[in-house]
Length: 564
Image 1 (cartoon, rainbow, N blue to C red):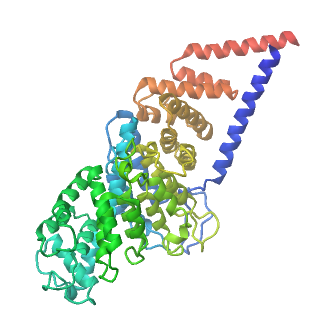
Image 2 (cartoon, rainbow, N blue to C red; image 1 turned 90 degrees about the vertical axis):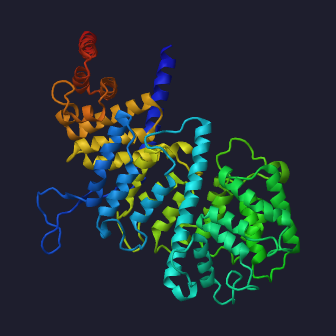
Image 3 (tube, rainbow, N blue to C red; image 1 turned 120 degrees about the horizontal axis):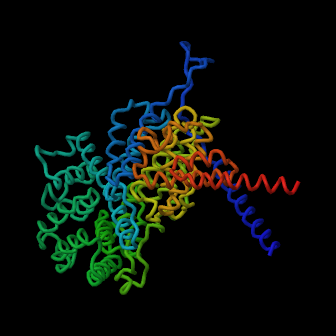
């Protein structure tokens, strides 16, 4: 009926208004990244001239990478974007890749991004449950490996800074480096067992620091080299002989079998009952090794209760990432013995979220440390939101020093399939990230419409939703850009889909180009831009659609005349 039709039309109009309102509210909350810099006079003051402002070096440096990502997505040929980002950072001046108020540079941030995303494939989106689960586990492991490499670097620096205490000879092995590090760390404890018979027992300390540096083969070598007689009474003979097997299984499979987990857990609980806390932390390091191998919650709680084991966020984070069993589609077999849920990434994220950002940034002095923390716990959308909105406390106004990084992290995370993994507990969906990229692209609309469309196309890719949704979004954004710039020739080419046009370069597939242009034309019709819609239909090789608009316009005009 006419009434039901009117009601449905009213509902649709109301829904569209609500969506537009929500988009406006979100968009108004997104800080604007500064692309252009004011031209400075000789005295350093801003010149009031008609000369176009210059593009900031940081903004300009990303454009070529953005173009290559678009070409890669069009051709299907993978492009190593992270390699080019790291190379770009290496070639930039120091002041362009760091903030004057922070010692942690943007180079450090992007190095962490590269480390964490190293298992991901450029241009590939994980889709099946199995693939998503496998990639989540792989990224957790790569985050942990980054922390291990960082700690190994710290060990080397400590040895270099304290050569007399380290007493390290030429061409040392990794295990010898660990022992040199222990000489420095325990320099006030007296002689150590590897330097003098009867010295302080450091077997479990050595084993832990091998794990902490990622030296798993050296950990196995250490255990195999220690005879049972040296540590008789300290551990069960059966467990000493089994340790190399346990460690290898843990390294290869990411966890022990259910029976081996139970063996390690039971021995760990026995040690807790019998332990002597005065034995130079020996038992605590031993419990720590057992916890790493079996990921038991009770043992982990005991380890975390020792305030001397983890004195910084990096060690704590590494330990928690070791325990995380992320990616399995079913409950782990260990629950058969412990009746406990395995450690999950979301649990770690919730623990870290209990404290404000300033807690992790040395009272705001190192803001990028919090971004790195979010990256290492796979909170990709949270990283973007933090960087996009961060403002130094001593600066006022619309100063967002990391907004450009947030934009390009959106693009990189999308291109490497990170958003598809669902690892962010505070996810607000891809819409916010898409809006950040789109709003950034608007900076180029008037002066560089071709560059603007590069970003608009990627904003649609970040939004996702499948081929039809992406094409429709790209069509809507093409229409928006044509209205903003009036650059029909630049974007579409003069008279047909010219080979020199931006759209042809971005979308070499004729059918894709046609679908995008038709989507833009439909948007023009919906917004009563009939002349523009006809031009777009003609450009897409759809003359009958253009003729249909003319006929409809004539029909409406005749009807209006008859009614008058």
